[in-house]
Image (tube, rainbow, N blue to C red; front, side, top):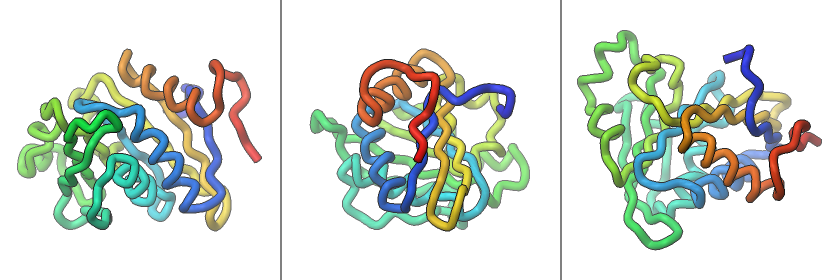
Length: 178
């Protein structure tokens, strides 16, 4: 991934801003979308999922499903359509064969589900083909770089819609940084 430039590059200055970016992204999502989150421990992945959940109207508290691997939350899309948010954490995954034991295939094939996978580096590339990778990079104690890499037509549409919401206008060569 390091040889590829991100399609969108954002800098968050606080956990609240990270959640706000995610809530904004949630308005662009629909059933069947997949987001793959990557970054070191403490880089803001779960905070980002909390913002997505808020943006989807999920009422319960969202925490990392590290020990149970997947949590399902019920929410709604902006148009009122019910949606399921599958929050997956592959941190404790030791072998790719373990993916079949907790129903990830069912989550990925749910047309009314949005799947968000933390530690997606452990997911074999063959499992998804249209998605967005979001790479989290700590820059300071609460400051994070969020780099968006779209794959497939739907992935590109998601990132472009987010760009218009956050930045406005069309693609810029320089990312908004402060």
